[in-house]
Amino acid sequence: GAVVSQHPSWVICKSGTSVKIECRSLDFQATTMFWYRQFPKQSLMLMATSNEGSKATYEQGVEKDKFLINHASLTLSTLTVTSAHPEDSSFYICSATSDGLPYNEQFFGPGTRLTVL
Amino acid sequence: GEDVEQSLFLSVREGDSSVINCTYTDSSSTYLYWYKQEPGAGLQLLTYIFSNMDMKQDQRLTVLLNKKDKHLSLRIADTQTGDSAIYFCAPWDGYSGGGADGLTFGKGTHLIIQP
Image (cartoon, each protein chain N blue to C red):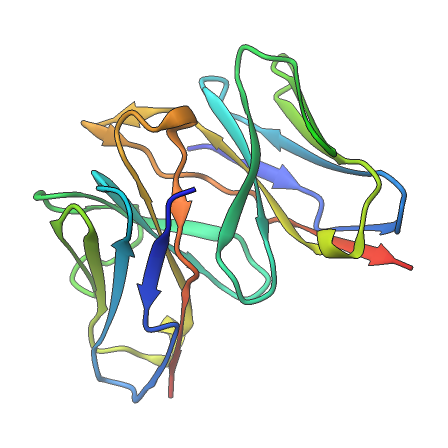
């Protein structure tokens, strides 16, 4: 299957700072990328959908000014957590898909664990 | 929106069959996926079933779909220690607003293998 990478795999930051997480599709062009958040022992919650070249669509309850998403190319999407606070600590997972993929599969990155002190 | 329910834990003996159940609410789901997540890792697509199918078999995996009851199950035959993970059910209802929709996941079922 296709490969999606995330960088960094983990990050620790101080409260009030901003953190950028990258999601890359390594061997295919991703027309759509998704960002999910997973709390410990919880399910993945969709945060936003990002189509290349257009503004991200955020799910209800997700602050778009806090979680900035940029999908500037068909292989890269970034999630920036601005002015991070301890309650933003979580496991962030991206996925990528492309129009016409068999059974519309989404390929998931390995995740980024964010800890805000 | 879609609601997806799964039992949180399932404990089976090594070599037995595991059956993980899932119920969902959106009858317009076109594909229904099963994902596996090992500790600290991302998600791996295990298998899927298209909404016009009742059953799909893929080696040790059997997926059963009851559309009337909106019930999906995953059976793992001859369960091994390597099957120990969290299994997520994720129905998908297609496209909206010009692009693919994201997935709605159940809470996940922790599969525990006893020796």
